[in-house]
Image (tube, rainbow, N blue to C red; front, top):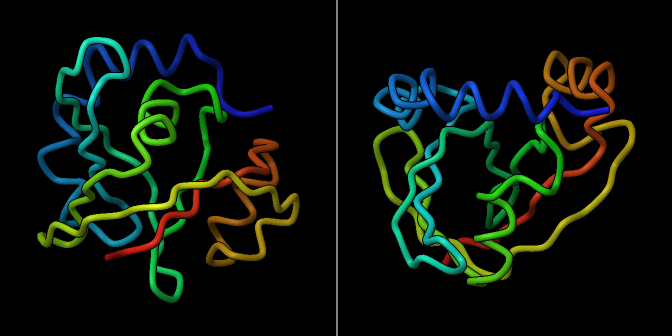
Length: 125
């Protein structure tokens, strides 16, 4: 089972506000810039992201029902800040890989232990 939603709410209220300032510059992390499905409000969410071919994969550590995931899927696009560069992503889709073979070995181990078997795949434009 992915991390509990209560932890996600706590992160959103506190930790994410600090992490969002540095996540776009750290290896294995990124900041997803997305719009609310109903509000249209702009959000910036720190995530685990990994370059795969002509796109990025995002670990679903809080599951596929996270607001940022639902916003990106609904919009069909997002921007992501990775290592200080902004990349526009399109064609988001959820995939499942129970072994997390797509992730670096240490990350895959943690994802398997969490039961976070899904990831979000997006193509860079």
